[in-house]
Image 1 (cartoon, rainbow, N blue to C red):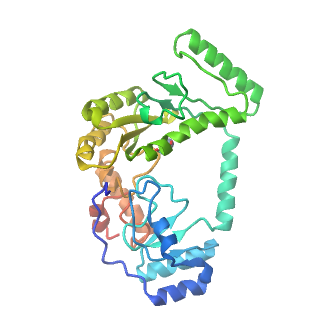
Image 2 (image 1 turned 90 degrees about the vertical axis):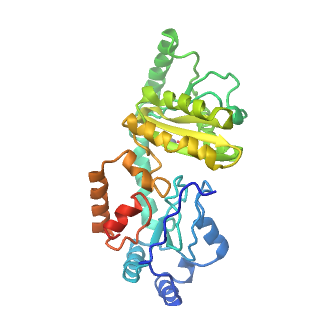
Length: 341
Ligand code: S2G
Ligand code: ZN
């Protein structure tokens, strides 16, 4: 079901032809040029199965040199390109809108080594990840602990001395229970128990996907206001939908998920533009983690001033003068066409 009115295809973009295919085969070899319908079908469809493109070609470069040859050629031919990593995007940013050429990043040797290095760095840096699992998780009953408190918070810290971390968390837990901040708590005794806690948390989006249609809103809000929005949405939707919220408290990030059996526009009209207006009134952001993609390209004004959006379009114009890179995304089509990208 379309959740976003589709833009009009930019007619300044060329359509691929057989000369293009032969050129790409020359630089990537047969293995680097994917034309099979089934593989393309997967790459054209996003993780939520909400957004679908119609690309007829996926390229698999294995070096930054091949990437640069592809982009240079596509730019000269005005072929639009969608770079794609794991295709786990949630706002229609990772898939083509029309027949844009798909450029898969997964095969990039040195790039993935670079990324792995960055993740290793992540492990040695102090970070705290918490989340609230709010009530009304009926549809997710299976994976959740039997004791249904209203809110669950998962705290993970890491540092250079495990015993010190454990001590800190133990005293935090005891103190918080003594002063009534927490009703109950449990401390993972080893990495297996820690991962089983994460499995509960990370199972929520999966469970919601299995429960039917999900209207997802990834918002930055003042933590003290987060739950007001959940309550307001429950008020607006009543029994027509299950309002579920979780997220990253430390980042002020609420994942508001509205779950129904199937998509329908009357539910959508009760959610939008209300949820964006509400967020804007709290001076929050309509995207905290997932980006704007296609879904929120025309919503950026709820969180960014006109001057900022103009500046973003000017930078895009500088770096991508023909606007071939992942078109129709992030910025409003009106601004993109004004700046000629
Ligand atoms: C999360 C991923 C998917 C979702 O679980 O923290 O960022 O449902 C999300 O929003
Ligand atoms: Zn998240």
